[in-house]
Image 1: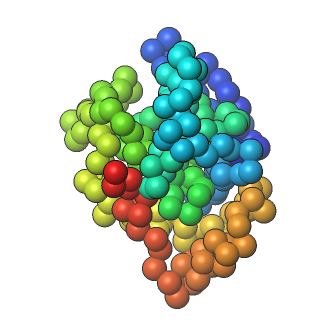
Image 2: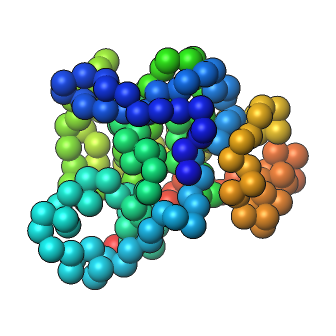
Image 3: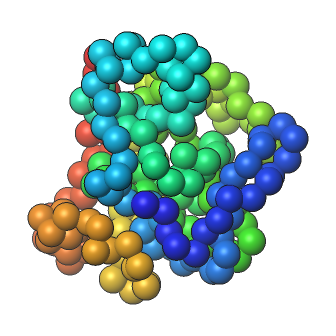
Length: 196
């Protein structure tokens, strides 16, 4: 489920729609949490979908570390890619704001964390010098950088309002609390990489 203070908005003719913050969302805020309405599909289920449903649904799904496809039921599926995102998927089943997001700003994430099937060069809003292409193995290429961003954001979890916290499973909450107190290392983003 997406943060309740977000909405779908037209971004540009090239990008289409995206997700916008209706109010200030501080770093460390959970902006999306997987919930019971999100569908987890096995690869065979996706392969068996008739066209054009299969092709269309692949646009709005991501692949988890087990190779399953996750189809979001709400407007989380409209979060766009950015090489300098303000949100980040984590190995805990939630996305977190990795920097402050002003009211009216678009929420974005790096699709390199989503186990994409085919690499692509996205419409880019800024500097392409450091990457330019989103690849299926980006998690292994950028793990150290992304681990640092995630750890920094997680350290803020208890310092900001968390309207989605009740959707996080209790065992994950307990683990996050130990991470925040530095009694347990954060799960590495490499744990999100599908190895198939």
